[in-house]
Image (tube, rainbow, N blue to C red; front, side, top):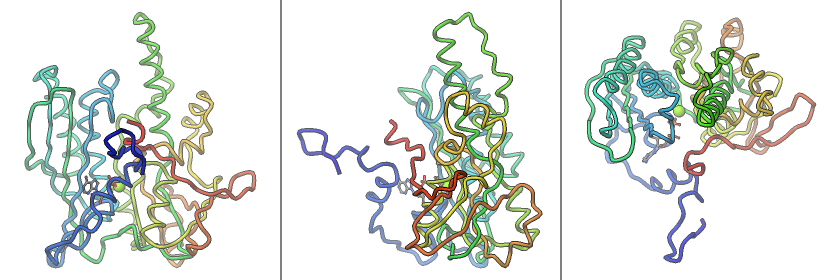
Length: 349
Ligand code: ADP
Ligand code: MG
């Protein structure tokens, strides 16, 4: 850890987000036997008889997670709910309730906050969850939104990050890298507007990637499809920080390695086009861009036939013994180490 000032205090940037969480929560003891999972997965799991209660929380900060120049408040409210529901689905559970905390400065009018809540309500209606409370306070700088989501699952249906075993197949849903490309476009248009406020941004040809950034959908459909197919993944996580980072989380928690194949990573043509325009390799966007909110999961090989016809999930590799490490087999035939360069708000900030 790095000391960055003459008082000998430690710069939190030297730990990174996950290092900081590890440091602050190391050695925390649970006082109750019903606390089945605490820090360290997509959500906490509480024993509730035959059922498990699943709880997760995310905090969105103006200027860090969203930019008011290009984020419609209705979309922001929707996204704040969506990203939490994604963590509930990642436990193979179903969301039931949310609480919404906001800190808001007087720069925001009542009408603006009504828009925010229109988005929150829309997501609640679409995903069948009840808004049951929250907290409201003032902020001196910008808007903060913190949503807590509560979900439910049959106890033996809950899927953790830790259940992957060697030879399991690795799958991802949807396609990756789009949300990051959407952000690149929105930031470029913001700069262009600042340089010349008379120009009208032409973003119509980027609508796919912009939607991926501004209005992500949590993958309830995947959870339902796997359920109908009679498949319980051995491990699962949602892709909020980039594919590489999430694979490393699964491997770390499961005590395994993994090999994935570049040519198998699902990329949308519109994402790849935008990435090329920015001189970025589309695979890099998938591996290291964030906020796609797709699901990454593993299944045992014997379940492959049950899900091979589901068009929205794609096999990208397999789990290995830990000693084999974390590898990406590139399209040009090289084996390279997978490293997490996922978006790290603490290092970035
Ligand atoms: P995700 O990306 O799935 O939302 P995070 O990386 O934010 O997960 O968090 C990883 C784990 O660390 C989760 O179990 C989360 O509840 C926990 N966590 C994050 N921040 C804190 C904190 N400040 N105090 C205690 N636990 C935390
Ligand atoms: Mg998650």
